[in-house]
Length: 370
Image (tube, rainbow, N blue to C red):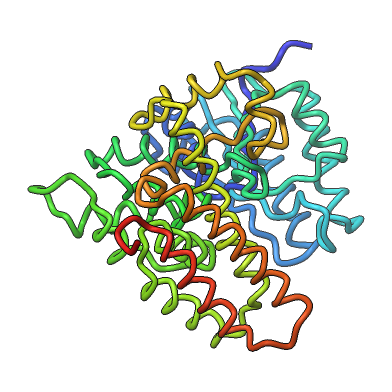
């Protein structure tokens, strides 16, 4: 069955993007003219199953009621919360209400009547979702999965697009830092960009690393990134400061080691090897393309994405940092990281002391210190 042009569904786990896209679509459908009489907007927030049932009934009534002054009518079920698999969503009363809404849509809407649904969660095993898939124009906006390799590239693309809309440009490493601090949620990204936009004012449009550090709060992911970033730049004092802060907050030393320090040292070493092959290192796309042209046997030892292919982004970020290290220094850093990891796991040595010593040994591998 061909998709009906008068049923629309905007769903997904990225609540910021869902709300943004649903509002944009609503404006398009209504022409931006909502006088409160022609169109109806029904809040989908349900506290319990009876509330969900009453919301569905209100939507059905709205769909079956022609506009008072004639013409077209848009009914928006906004931010529905009762379509997920939870206590309310599984309730017979809720399911009865949703079934009545599905029956109303199946019976066909009147001429000029359009139904718009927005929800940040929906159980895709239910008949209602299967009906929407077949009969509605559906758009899904899920959060970027940060457990997958290469998620930073997707977030960076999203940030650059939103920054461009605000007339902002990111300087050098500022974009990478922003990605790690702001995370993957569209709403959070938008909020942080707006803060930076207001902070810079109309006369300055380039975002620096200092601007990002000043305006974007340091999350756990941001701390992990900043520790690694400090190691790359040979800034032992900053790395030690962040490590101590995390340990005082109860963070696990082995977790810090394996989430930040080991990946940083590994990526620096790999980036150094790749740089010595004289690959282009200043432009991401050129670097990625050159990496793809290498023989497969030379790419198999590099970090891989779950979906296949080399995880290029972290290697590219490590290229500039690798320039400050000698190959001998990075080999020594790899050995130091191995010893430190074993010490944390198999000995009773003070964890803070082990990490401090490792930071000193890693940063001593820079050309400057040597």
